[in-house]
Length: 358
Image 1: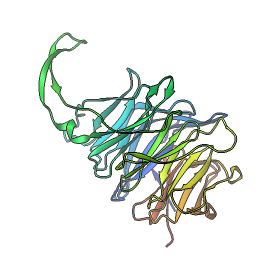
Image 2: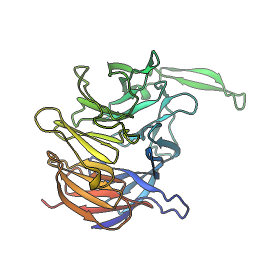
Image 3: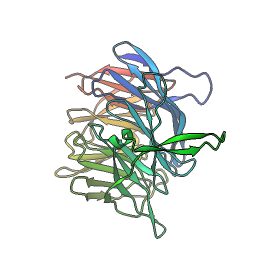
Image 4: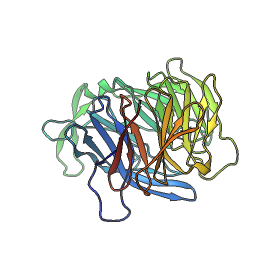
């Protein structure tokens, strides 16, 4: 086991935590979403306000993105920003002046931030954003309204159109009254499919081959859609008591896309898309903050408020192993693409990394 400092520690309270982790495709870099985290009677709440990247070869970290706030609570959710596979673009939602999806460049050699056009979002915000694995498209879930009820849909955007300038037109800068040349783009969503109505969607994830999409709602519903056939394959409503803390926090497919797992109420809910028996963890196991599938798909790792990382059988949910390096909570977890290491994020920018046997 070794400990990494992925972002500078803070001396003020509340202490920032590593809320999400993601290894880049090569496994040489680890991206950390950092911000605040708190528990309430209605569930978890917090925000992400900076992203850092840790170079696993050089052993150094640097800030990747900052200056925006992405909120998360049981009744309000702004999707975390997503990074393109080539790490050249970041896409995120902003709701200050209407809901829009913005893009910013991350690798400008001159140290300047390239300017890109934005896209309109849904009237009630986005229910999730995801780049396809080749980086050519951004998939978005929009929370539309129809007859006073949520009527979400899925749309696609071709990234290449961000770099195709059709011309310019003269505009007046409202801040200084001076004219400037505004670039003209043809950027628009392409409609894909409509999702079942009735619930605000708050998180989404693509399957490894980009064919399937799973989305989770603020009342615990799960929908699985086939983006190629443009149809919904399965829906799993919340079962049992209508708990206040039942909003989906994270959803994911198993690597073979035969299972979907949702994190809600501090528990994992696994549902088969074919053969298999659904399972869920019990509250007696502890309050889970995050989970990740091992690339082989036979196990998954969940991290808990009690500071433990537990390895579960992906088919049954049985605990196979349990690790603990301290009493402070763990908030995020990710496997390296080769499956040989696992990383778990904790408070004050610290990440624990350990080797996987076998």
